[in-house]
Amino acid sequence: MEDPQFELTHEELIFAQSLIDAAQPQTVTLKQFYGAAWNEIESPTNFGGRFAASVVARRLRDIALTGGITSARARIYRIKTGDWVRCDAKFSC
Image (cartoon, rainbow, N blue to C red):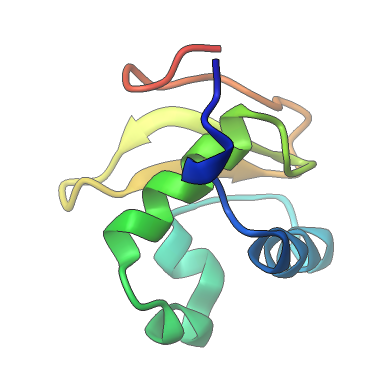
């Protein structure tokens, strides 16, 4: 069962969905996807975990975890590909 306290806040969900809605289909890390706004995130590790939990809980549309990670341990996401949720080993769907 998902823990709503470990997901994005309402305001964070609205902002994230606005970025997704404006995006072209792509495969990215959160840092790449958020661009300059990433510098405003107080705790990137905590935010990344909450973002992933929100994706798995299907709180965001048109985005999916690929199950891949970078050498810097950043999760990789697919935006607007129609492949909505594929969980990595840390999450269960």
